[in-house]
Image (cartoon, rainbow, N blue to C red; front, side, top):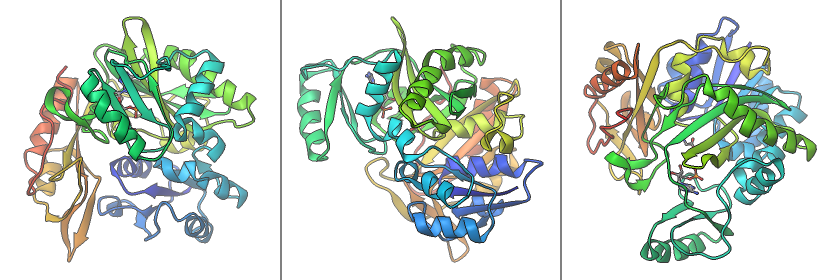
Length: 395
Ligand code: AMP
Ligand code: GLY
């Protein structure tokens, strides 16, 4: 199989790493990829949002399967375009990707499907959560416990110039459950957890994700099947009933509240950085799973993985470019996996190029061992302004 991965972050590096271990892979390509991915794949300078160039590239390279990492190209219809041109693709149609692209559409589908989620509130009054409707790369949600927070959130939401809604504020531990889906069939990955806030103890603003781990002490791997039955399958049936069957990965962001499980959001693609902690546990061949063979669920090893995100100076407010990065080879020499999320090469030198720069993944027999391995490897890496959370997977 000739496979093309679309995207350039840590999730795409993890996908490329896992695909490169597949017995059915003959050639691996990426667009645009990154310096880490280029060690595993031929990288092509085509951006993830350049639909027509991606279709041409896939046809030129006679790609058997395109694996789309990020949501924006899916919401914009990349999978439809590829399928129309006869190229097989892992990722949903634009119509099905609305489950992530529009929060109001997701709410409507959940309501019709009877899937438990936060109630929409008719009046904005604290405590509540303000959410803009469209894609906002993690920046369109304001959790308001106080009147002062709400008074800040409403003008900020209005300033984004998109419709927004107000919903009930839920409390409890969060978890992510990914299912590979083909129409009304789905098979689950084990649950994973990500850490959205910038600071230790979940302080500070939301980010794209500062770390992740799997398995979870409070939600065993085996619980994923029941969650898929409660959450994913009814949504898949509802999407199919509306004439937009979902092909690809349906990601449920969930909260374990005192009143049971509630859906916080759906995404139409692999989560970042949860994927970085799930794929190192995978024992199955990833290619048949992504090519739509759901006859077997993903088989995972009884080991743990912990991902620590190393972010650049100023993240999440701004990104950082051109700062030299030291120590990646030393970190890899410890046995950890170092995935590139926002890096570039300048004159042969590895430098920062984004908000989240590197993901360090430790694997071990237990979460504690994997955590120690990840932090040990992270301590070998250094760049000016580097920031990371010290409490990933520590309970
Ligand atoms: P989302 O982009 O919808 O995943 O929201 C980002 C983060 O905001 C979630 O991971 C939660 O931590 C928080 N959040 C979103 N909706 C709610 C809610 N209804 N209650 C409490 N926290 C929420
Ligand atoms: N881990 C959050 C996301 O991928 O949206």
